Image: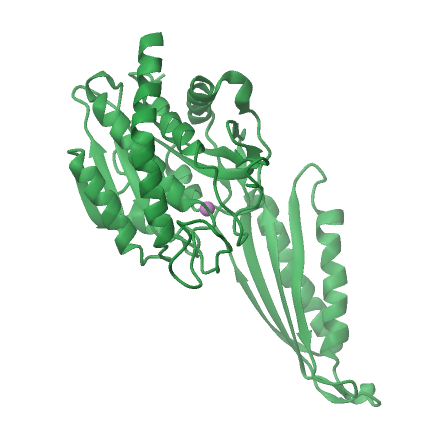
Length: 397
Ligand code: NI
């Protein structure tokens, strides 16, 4: 075992410069949404050179490659996302984005590069692997409805028993990893409300139906949904983030617009809050005789780690980084992640790969224009993904 472990380290170090180059190449050429043709082409070329069976155009622009292990009865999938964000990067690095207004500020460039590295490591060990592997590179993680549903639709996880993914994580120091027990990410819903009253002179409010007062009451009211109507042992957030109305000081406007977000970690709580918002706006508008339009858009489902997949990920992370560097259970995060769709279908685990490095000034959060990864962690990430497969048991436990 020791020999094998040090072999892996030697190989990781040998692959590392090439994987850094790939990451920087993708970082220079960020692509958005489903339009990830260049990145997908780069991944497909690399996988083809490894001799894997490669399918392109999966889920519109995703790539799926199979590493078939003779005699293996199970298949494990490893997934990376490929899309960037429509944000202007603030960076002096030579590999900074070359496309104005677009940048890899969520680390998906690193996810793609690390999964390619893992594919190279695993292909070299093909004969000794306990399971066949599927490498999944998906588009459009950042935008609803996500890229995962399209990938699943196109058969990306057909015949797959388990699935794993990792996300670079600036809240955890470089060299460590975090694994959540159960819920990992929230369901992030968005609501938009338009209140339609009757406008008029500010000195004659009795002739109007004032949408500002109605909106203010609604906002104050829904703050009690979490504090008074949700079980205190549950976690939920309701935030109003926009409230627009009116144009001047002496006119009561006709309309007010309210936008906000609801973050929940289970379906029962999510439904309850959604219903309370709907009933709340209906009731208050009816009291004042106003009309309203409510749009409620559901975000990705809650991402839940499966207990067996979690065990497997913990084992692999312990071997890769040392037991003392595995944070378990890690804190869930109230963002959203479309890996949730895969994990709804088959047992899955989503790992936070630490990338915070104060000495190097790498402390910025995901989606921050200054976000960058500590490239050293590319080693951890590709080794960790490879270990997940190598540590898998040969048959169903
Ligand atoms: Ni991301």
